[in-house]
Picture 1 (cartoon, rainbow, N blue to C red):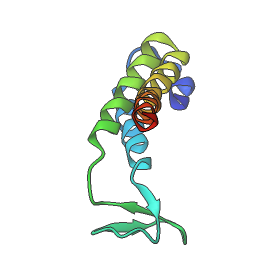
Picture 2: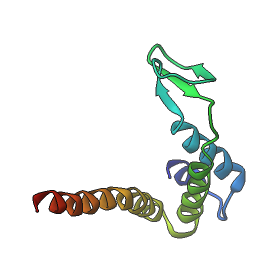
Picture 3: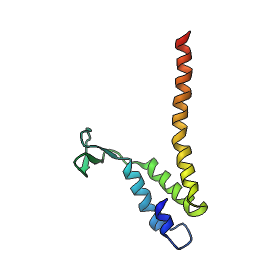
Picture 4: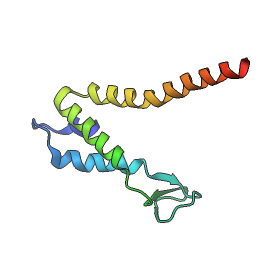
Length: 105
């Protein structure tokens, strides 16, 4: 995680990690301005911040990645994020393969 690289002090530094995790979570609430939302904040002419839900899973994963970065170095959260994002993709591919076999018979 980029902010971790700028800190010279050792330790978890949750005073920095919590806001960074909140920013990571908020990025998951960015939607096109034309999307229908109950509540939102316009940020640009094409993007708004949806306030319809709190991205708690993304916040917790951001905090976990912060912990990994501070404890194990910069590569650990990158690998965790890649693994986390690949799991649903692999399930989709494997599931689609199994479904396509049932259509062939």
